[in-house]
Length: 579
Image (cartoon, rainbow, N blue to C red):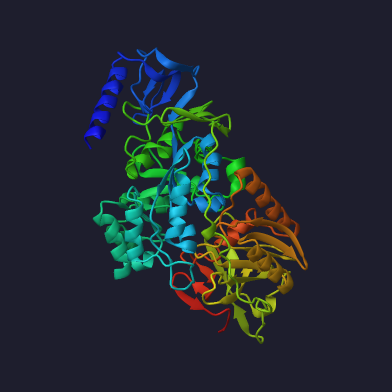
């Protein structure tokens, strides 16, 4: 302890000396247009860096061991994603870091509940160890709802005891990840409240997940200690939450894109209550569009002041999640910095992490270290699926409970067409969920509208939150072949038509992640999407949309390995019903 104290004092003395101009900085970024997230001002000045920290801001600084003349380019704090599931990128933490660092993201608040649903604590430890080998700063929240409901089978159960253990293993965790079981919160379920107590009792945060919740129920949810919500889709919902003290994470991902609809709620009086998050973004969009930088560009194009947009992408998130010394360009703050060419396209030129250049012109400077774990491979153990995807039509007079997909949303509709209308021509396709952990052997079959497939089938082990195998298809043969191919690959995505596999993306790590880099994964992901399009699929991101068919905590009708689920009532419903 004494040695640590001596080191701290010596380092602080040197930082103060640099701040006073009596000692040279390690690095000087000169002629930078600094975006001040405290005041919203932008002014050209110099920024000295010493020991990974910003020593000061001002024109008095001119000397350093290394001087980088930014020639009037914009300097912002490193971007922070307020809510993301790394697993949705299908990349390991190392490859995710390599993909997003060049886009100016230097820190992410992530919820690893996908891999934890599959593998429990070993999955969490895999993510933590893999993240430690990168320059990207990962802040892991501890999953709160595994399983999210009793109406599905998961690979692991993360109860109160496991949550305690997770906080012990990751003591720096900011808190409890999105509490999706909002019915359990507002009904004061002791098992749910005990999880909140663990977080609040150890002075940690609790993230929220409250789609369509309003009025007294929303008040009850907030009163329980919830601090954020990213399931907001319109200005009215956003303002209701902000008025109650909830921070709103404006989500702009691959399927759920809420930025444009929520942005009118942001004004000068309440801008501190909003943050930016990607939630779920697949590899192709990461490569083609970027990450938080893409949200900045889109927000400014929608009319948001550039400096305000940067505030939502940096200091607001840092303050809420208690990331001390992050999110601003100011004395004593970490020198996590991004250089932009302009404040319209937000083209990233350079990225610094604690004063070291980590990315330039679209590429990382150093390759991240890799981390493998063979115990998370070969996790798909299917029951016998032969003949299990048959759809037996009832006698006339019955109606079907059908899941309808809404492009760009993770909400699904609920239709009840007559059984006589069930056909490919009416875009009423089979959807099946197969328990993949070798536990129950459950197989459920339902109907879905919105994919537009004319032939063949799509299969995937990426299906929130339990990540059982989900298949959407026209005929049994194609559905069985696609499912079997995914299982042989140890998990992943596949497209099949009759006796032929048209495209596949193996995801051997827990059936969720690939060891390959973002470009390779994006290329394979593009191939499976194109194959789906050739079969008639009309959705822009069919596998992402398919992954949410099983998310039994987002309205209205979903399907799990245990059958169709009425989300609002948290109960099962039959496929066929009569008046």
